[in-house]
Length: 262
Length: 69
Image 1 (cartoon, helix red, strand yellow):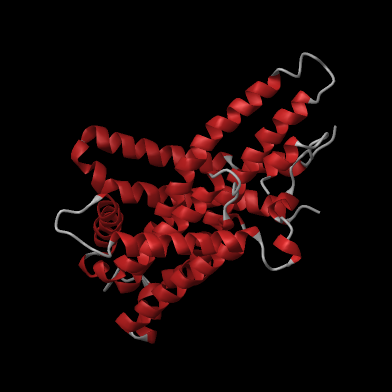
Image 2: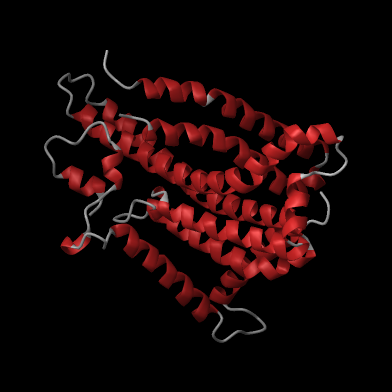
């Protein structure tokens, strides 16, 4: 059930909101069957059905759905894959499009009534997505340069006086092999987590103000709920932007794996 | 007074990334104002720079909750 709807029926809303809000109990008494799992299944089903239906009967003059599917794919291929990776980026376009659409849909779940929370506000989901990207760019790096060649190009930047490698190589190692997947997953997670937390603070804060004893504090709850409306609009922007940023960083990492000499 | 010192800590942690993101967007706006045709060319760089800097502020959020007792 949605948080807000369950709060509406309560006499005294829980305040302040805590991390426990992110762990709803399992549905139908089954512990592993959580809301998040159902949402991920829903997202996958939506993507598969949408692209299958949109492209089942392709026409030269595209219909509305075909146009939408083609512009999503065209956007990822032309202004992310080709722009960042270069001409050979086209082969990654299907993966990048799937990633973009999946993250965008799961993020937008945070704003849909009754769902109201994004699966990406649990670290496990972004970690899996980042792991796929991590393995993908390591694989293509090794494939393009060979194992030693990839380590050499990523840890020893050319045109540097050799004593600098004492400083540069550890930094590059931490950056390329540790921080990249870590920040990639944490960025998506923290954005969705903080977004949900902010909406909770202002929604529940409105109730907390309404329940205040002083008559002069009660009207302030309108202000708090007004902030909720504004923040919901802001969250829409963040949800779509984070999907774009995740895909952009993935293709930027792939580009640095494939680059000849950087 | 009651409350968590983590809130104050996060406020401090957000100063640096706040300035950083501001600088990135300022540079982008300036470059577009000077050469409007580079708007599309620089947009991926804008978001790459923003994403890298923003990560620092997001560490603050995550660790604030991670290390609460």
